[in-house]
Length: 469
Ligand code: ADP
Image (cartoon, rainbow, N blue to C red; front, top):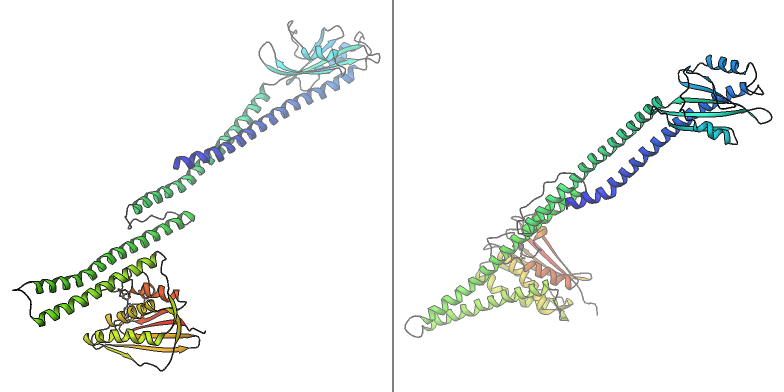
């Protein structure tokens, strides 16, 4: 993946930057080259105009003072060191040469040849002498008023020094270009590494999480978008770990829940089977009583699990009918009364003289009451009190179940309605009772609120909308 990002960066960014830098270096070099060469030509041309003007005063080069004037000008020319001046007579012979040496017989003067035939009488030549030296030369033809050639002046200068300056400038431009590209590569590599490394970390950790290692955490390297992603994945791993633990606890709780009644049923069945023939009536009655009770409990647990599974699949169907909530609550309390007594707890309920009509699924509603009152009894010690109240509140009917039990810690309170969550692992239960109750109440358009304090007790309020028609 790192290679992918690096390749894309090279293609998208580096290539463009290299192209821009290359273009800039070439353009600047060309501009400098053109500037220097055209300046040299301008200087030579300017100087040639000066001498041409002086010599154009003569009508012909046969004039007795012509050669002397030309020689005089050339000898007094201040820039003799940097440029060479030739005065060529109308026959093409070199009349004056500023270097003082005899001209090279093989000297080729393309500018002179061109200037002779050109309309402007002027030509430029950039080339190499036979010595290999690079030079710029200009020739200006001087004509009299009849248009006849009087002479030609030729200025020539060496380009060696200027070429050195130009190559120096090009070297500087190239160096600056290379430094820019180097900086871009350096900062780009650093930037890519700052993305690729954390992304690789994330990918490695995600693989570990996928393999079930929910303790895997990513080291957050930067406080940026990738840092936020690391935080999210770390939170996700923690949440997955917690839910995995909850799932395992759930499996062990459910297995335990199922094993307890099964052990009792098996034990009593074996007791009744053993001995010599039929057990005595008392043992038989007690045994059968326990077997029936435990089978009912087992059925209840399995029903609850099935309900939960339906709820998870979104298949909870409500068979709604108009019913009096107080009658349903009464039935459940009647059922729970014996249990509370057997456990030595006080289940208090003052049946109010009210009718509270709601549109609800009878069995599901009873399930909610059973789950809530079962919890209240389960988490309340012997001699504790569980109070149930039914009150009407404008458009709502509220069933309030209060207990004097162990209570729920503030940290656990927001999670008790989550599936599989158990604040108290030592007490029997699968951790889905409140999740089911909450889902059913919500499906009926109501609310399930829980208030609790450790050592004080818990109050669960089930609010349902009253049926108006
Ligand atoms: P469980 O089957 O474990 O009772 P529930 O979903 O019914 O599962 O309840 C979730 C958790 O909420 C329980 O494990 C328990 O810790 C806490 N809880 C529920 N009702 C009460 C209560 N009346 N008093 C104290 N704790 C309670």
